[in-house]
Image (cartoon, rainbow over all chains, first blue to last red; front, side):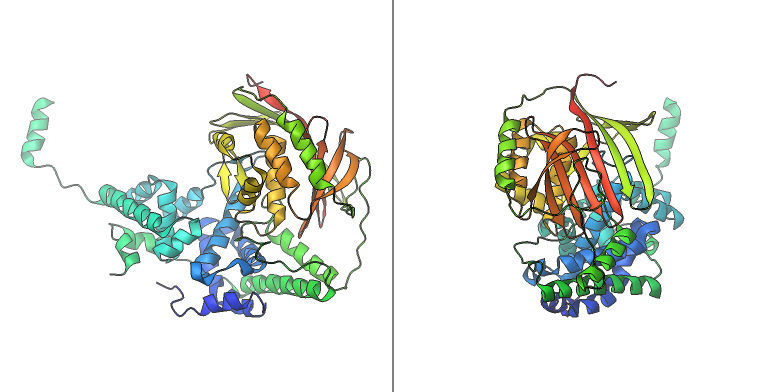
Amino acid sequence: MTGDADGDSDAQLTRSAADSAAFAALVRRHSPALHGYFVRRRPGAADDLLAEAWLQAFATRRTFDAARGSARGWLFGVARNVLAAHLRKAGRDVAGAPAPLDSDPWEAVDQRLDAGALAPQLRHALAGLPPDERELMLLVAWEQLTPSEAAAVVGIPAATARTRLRRARGRLRERLTPTPEPPQYMAATTGDLA
Amino acid sequence: MTEDQTYLDFPGADALQAAGRVAPPSTQVLDAAMAAVRAAADQESARQRTNDQPRPTRDDLVVGTPVAARRLISGRRIAAVFAMAAVAAGLVVATSTTATPTGTSTAAPQHTADNGATAFLDGVAQVADAQPASAAPYWRVQYKNVKTGPSQRPLSSTATVYASRSGYMIESNGHVYKKGSAAAWSVGGKLVGWDGLDRLPTDPATLVGMLEAGQSDHSGAFDQAGTILGGSPAGPQLRAGLFQALGRLPGVKVVGTVRDSIGRSGTEVIYPGAWGAEALIIDPKTSTLLATVWWQADGRSDTTYLSTGPAMTIG
């Protein structure tokens, strides 16, 4: 876990509402994590998306409420919105057309897993997860967010996020746990029937 | 085992985590992000000094989602921020010209001091509310996009979209693109399909709240309402509610009568967003959204809705 256990970022983000200079410390501290988030999902646009996310975060910094969540979770929420907007825009063949309903970055994520030589079974298991469960799982596995932070990022209650994460873990276990070899008598029975 | 680790207790979790490892960003990337924020901070400071715009308050801002999500992005927008910072700091003197009746100026129009937007849009809402509802399986929108810059010839494209409740098809310049996924429109931080539009509330105050959820200023709500009104199968009551909602967004102004890119007369309503102005050209007699116009740092973009309405078949 690399969250802000000390709350420094929460305080800096709160203070930056009146003192914009305090925001610079947040940029230095969280840029690597936010850049990683974009690289994993849209590698070709990550540099621009990082700057875009910081502009959004700066413009909306006064909405941060430390009582409702961590600065880290809030910043990833901004990043997620920036990414979603980028994907929606990229998904349009023609400007003005409606966006596809599923602006899911799975294709880029899957390419990343493929490049990482992740076992095909794991890729297929992840591909088979509902997008909302998969997104939460990747926020925890890759961004090292807590379930509460991941919940804040996608805008759902923490309890709902935990339920979805448990469900996702169950599905992954079910699909990834090696199936034992069939006993000999089963093979023989199958052979007889065939 | 921490709580997070309990959710990563499945075969292959280590490999999954390893696949997520990336190199840190370069110094140049970090410097660019920092420079963008500093420019935005300078811009804000200059605004406060000159007091030419009220400082945003919590009431004005809700948790951040992309401003003008479908328009400026990344590098172009950062460049715009730099340019705006320079203007705000008094380094550059820019002049704006009023929109011409033909609607071809590349500079955003000055806003009229008289804000009759609420009354005008409430009137349009009454007209919209009286329109017949449709039960047709498709919604057809034909539109033309024109991008005009100060030093380039206009780029134009025309397309026809057929949306159904389960997918949509785009025909553009002789090519047909079928989309398996359902068409969707942004409402606040969410995407809403055709069925979702039918379920949206029609009360303007509620709609404003939904459209502004996750938006950093009112331009997001203005943009989303315009997109739904221009190209979606929203029913008469929702369209009426959206027109009323537009009239309740602070900063929305009525410019006056203009002509769209194909010469149709309509009333222009504008929102002067932080990153550029966006306008809707509305025919008040029919409540039809004729066009949207977006003024950016590098020119203007027009989306002119040539025809919009229900369709029983594709083609």
